[in-house]
Length: 498
Image 1: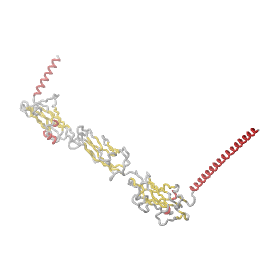
Image 2: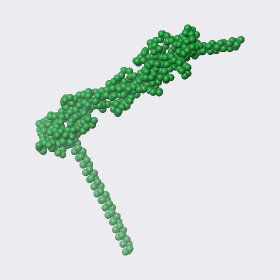
Image 3: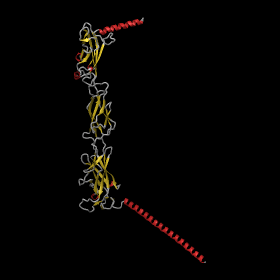
């Protein structure tokens, strides 16, 4: 009973479908269509006017309108189409045309005017990604028949936009002591072809060795720019800034598009350098006086007066002042002091006064404060130290020579000691330091030498005594043996004779 009814129902459906398929304005696709208007869905790609002119027959810009009949054709298959006025924003009649393809007989929807799916701005509100309207279809043979369809034309995206950086131009100011791994900047770019799920990746484009591409890195996903190497303010050229060329690339597989932007990273000076002595003709390393050294003449020293110093090498031919400055642009104050002397232990015999010279430079005035005779070979190690918390410092040496050969007299000079007596300075053959009598070091040395000499004399005497005793012992033994031999011979002769 049920089977014959099912067969009959199936046959009826096939019959009705065949009739509807042959009727103009009927849909070629089966659908529920009960109680609602049938929906016609089509797709075309966005295009510029240039694209439409260059590729008028591209399948990207047309899609099949799946209705029976021939658009604008004669009866009995001819149909007429009319767009209703319930569309939004854009009139589809200005953008699309309906036509029947002569070769295949298919009804087509064709894009005839440029459509920018992504809109004129980065916002989503002005995107044109869908056309919706009502389409009325009537057979030419009977225009009183009206069939209505809901039409949905989806505009497909084309990768026709370059990524756009948000918030450009970019800049950052950082200290040269910024730790490696610190994030200093975040850049962001959007691809308006797919603004919801961004597929933009970031990179740094190396330009030259000084562009900073080796000093920084960028996270390819979130655009974080980080420090990858220790920075050096002094090594940068004028401006003390890196120009990083950053690139954003969209994720299109077939033809990715990229955009570039320059980020300026300005480096400020950090307190990473100590003070330095400065004088004309010094040995320089990276523009700074290295291994600073001065000379002075013992014969020119006067109690309580500044020591006269000459630079090494002496390219100026005259005395110079002892000057130093902090190498950092922050220009911290510096202070001079006596670090040590050679021979050691005479630091307290001298004083150092620090005064501001000019600009960032400070000057040192070294004076002999107590009675002291200085000869050639004496050395003072002068320390200059910045007054910051880092307390970085530099050392210069003042080497004392004997008589100034460039002076007018070759005789030894004298100086007034604290007691008012004259003491000789720079006597040849003397120790570099003399306090008017024999120093404790000299006395100790004499005692040690005397003890060693006495010990050597004792060893020598003992050695000679030992040698002499051995000789006496060997001589006595020889004489005793000789006597025994002679006596035996005599006894033998007597026996024989007997």
